[in-house]
Image (cartoon, rainbow, N blue to C red):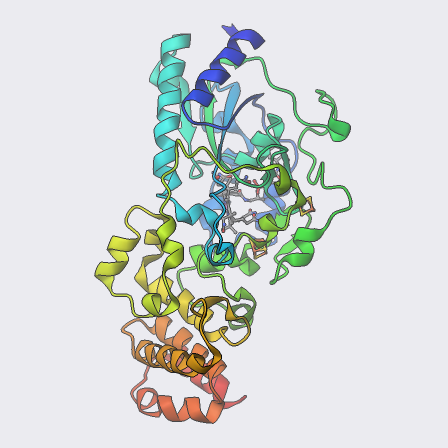
Length: 406
Ligand code: B12
Ligand code: SF4
Ligand code: SF4
């Protein structure tokens, strides 16, 4: 059975009604270029070995669902409403200000699957769906479907929604008339490289220039080892010392190379039919986070992406933000008078001192780093003398030794 353009377009409308902001169709075939392989060979996947282990499947969708000939690429706009204190929001990756999209978007994708069965007489084994976690290159297939193109920042950028689409995929054993990929000069055609990196970026390099850790190794190629998003979300251990300062005020995720992109100017806030906002998180103060206990963590981040980081990971990230406080006052309480700043720094220092004795050595390393960044070295050494005397973990002792040698 082949789904012609009329039926396809009416199905698309139903997908919009389910809450998707984009629904595009593409034909599947093995991917001819080897960019994913090169990326992994260069070590840019950091310790995400699951990416290396699934290269073949990612390159060839037939290994994921035998006989699948089309992909339905779905996009959900997650641009939150603008707030007066927008700068606070930049501390968190925007996607983390919602209940975990893996769950909420999945509900829509399941409903789309049910529609496929009902309308086109398919069985549950005739399609497979994923939200982020499957062995499918979601950005490449979305570009192939004409939803947008992959920018130099690696993101799938849409002319309508800018950088603010979350993606989902349905691979299906149904021959669907494909949508056409984008092409330069705003025309669409089937010819040429349908997924050219940076297709509509022109000479712009804003994202590459803005990345504070130089993580964009080449246009469209992110070295995860250097990426703040990887370090603050995926890395479960110690964050390399050289990256801690450039992490700046970012506590979870990073949108710097997204925010700077001029294509966002056309984006409007999302309808949020498949997302559930938890915007209150941006109001958490640094001291509240540094002092957070397990129960509050569970309650605050229930069903949210931050939950996966666990409290110890959040404390680690908060220590880094605290250590950077003197470089950027972004996390200082709003409206704080200069005369009150000393008291604030004293409270932060006390909280960090407590974390320097935390059960987890990984938290202790970052607390020690933060105290030395915030204080004069001699005073930090004095403050930590008793704690250091009881320290036996090699990674924490290395942090002390580093500062002693400075
Ligand atoms: C691993 C991963 C990460 C890693 C690595 C990021 C990276 N750039 O590769 C880390 C942890 C750093 C990360 C960070 C983020 N991520 Co992420 N991540 C992924 C994941 C799971 C796999 C990406 C991957 O395979 N990377 C390897 C590179 C080599 O592949 P690629 O990016 O797909 O690009 C290659 C292919 O397209 C290939 N290619 C070339 N030609 C063709 C042709 C065809 C037909 C195909 C199919 C492919 C193809 O070449 C490209 C370049 O090498 C995807 C979900 C998924 N299943 O795809 C989400 C995903 C890319 N992440 C997402 C998001 C939102 C983020 C963050 C914004 C989160 C945050 N706020 O902190 C940041 C953005 C960082 C950035 N600038 O990329 C979204 C992006 C949505 C969008 N509009 O693009 C995705 C799609 C998740 C989702 N379902 O919505 N992420
Ligand atoms: S997400 Fe942040 S650290 Fe990663 S490439 Fe973009 S700007 Fe750089
Ligand atoms: S900032 Fe410029 S170079 Fe980067 S993705 Fe956007 S348009 Fe492309």
